[in-house]
Amino acid sequence: MLYNKVFYEDRVIENERLELTDKGSLYFLGSNVTFRNCTLVLKVSGGNLIFDQDTRFIDCTFEVKQELKNHQQWVFASLKGCRFKGRLSGCDFGHWPGYSERAGHGGIEDCDFSEARMDGCRIMGCDPATLRFPKWPCFTILDPIARAPALRGVKWPGVHGDILPDTLLKNPPATRALTYYAPASARLLETTPEELRAVIEKFDCIVY
Image (tube, rainbow, N blue to C red; front, side, top):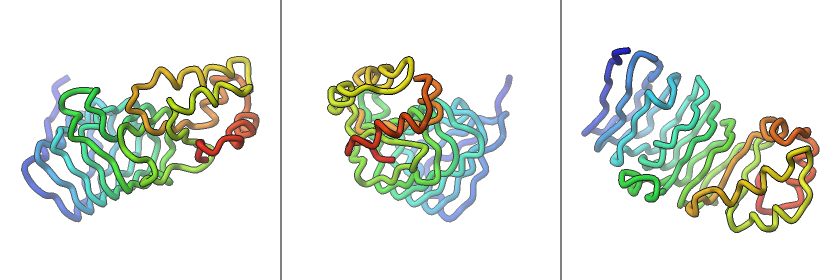
């Protein structure tokens, strides 16, 4: 398939609504571009969105109209004061130089995910205290690697209850927060969201 290539680079874009919705297009957001007070409507797969290390989003809103899956390239971008709406799964945000050389300039702060549904999404190398995470039925484990021993020390519900705490140590050292969607986690563990919440409520390191 031949894609139409759309480039945003070497400029400041302010107060615009950008519709990134054409599945036949590749959207290159960078290099050296700043989006300020913009609304970006996303309705393409992660493979159609290419970020660069000099991409900056300031006070922008992302309206995700199609579930955005496994999009790690957020770690190339600098995000400040942005809002996210819609479904995100397997996405990484923040500062993660270990991902690639281009990821050394990424970051996230003062962003709001409260209107998003996140599952298997990670905050890398940045302070999650500046972020607003989605409420239940999502839940966020803060400092998951350091907290893994404590989380493994309790009985989790379901036939495969140990999967969730056991996988925490498999995340990169830069992982600062990890958000799950409880119904999806419950299906994996073969339990119910209610039984899962009963364990989650025991831990101050889990935000829900």
